[in-house]
Image (cartoon, rainbow, N blue to C red; front, side, top):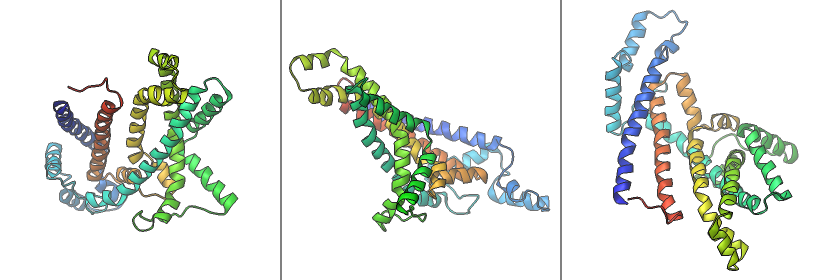
Length: 315
C-alpha cells in the first residue's frame, strides 16, 4: 500500500510537467502577445515595443523562457502577472477561496439531491416516482447552470422582492451575507450537476440490486431498507464517487458564465481574463493549478475506494 501511494505521488510530477509543456507551447503558438495587444492600433515606435518585450522577457528563445519558468516553479514562485503587474500568487489567493467555497457548497447540495433521489428511483423502478425523478434529472441536464441561476434570480425578485447581493463578502467576515450571495449560484450549479450523479446512482443501484448476494440477503429476511443501505448502496457508490469527484474538480475553474451572472470574481473568470490579455505567466499558473487539483482529487478518490470496497487492495 505504501509503495503504491508513493508511486502515485511520484507519477503526479511527470503528469504536471507534461501539462506545463503543453500549455507553454500552445500559448506561444497563438499569434500575438500582451505587448502587441497593448499597443494594437497605436502609433508607437517599434523600439518601445521591443524594449517592453525585453523587460518582460518575451524576446528570449522559447526554451529559455520555459527553463526560467520551471526554475521559478521549483522555487515555489509562480512569477508576476504580465497583465496586472502583481504576484500571481496574490491574484490566485484573492479568487481561489471564492471558487473553492462555491464548488464545495454546490457539491454538497448535488450529493444531497442526487444520492437519495437516485436510490429512490432505483428502488421504485418504473413507477410514477421513478418517472418524476427521471424528468427532474433530465431538466437539470437540459438547462445550463447559468440559465437556472437567471431563473432563480428573476423568481426571487418577482415573488419576494429580494435579489442576492452582488458584492462578495468573505465567509470569515460575515457568514450570513456570504451565504446570501452564494446560495443561489450553489443551488443552480448543484442542481445542474446533481442530474448526472442522480442518473449514475440510479443505474448503479439497479445493477447491484440484481446481484446474488442481494437476493440472498432478502431470502434471509433482512429488511429492505437494510438491504439497500448496507448491501446495495455501498457497492453502488464507486462510480458515483468518481463522477462527483470529477465534477468537483471542474467546478473550481469551470464556472465562468455562472460567475459572470452572479458577479463572482473567481478562478474561472480570472483565467478567461488572462487569456484575453495574453498573460502567459498567469495562464500557465492557473492551468497548472487546475491540473494539480484534478490529479490530487483522482488520487484521493483511489484511496477512498479501498475503504468503500474491501475487495480493492493496492499492492
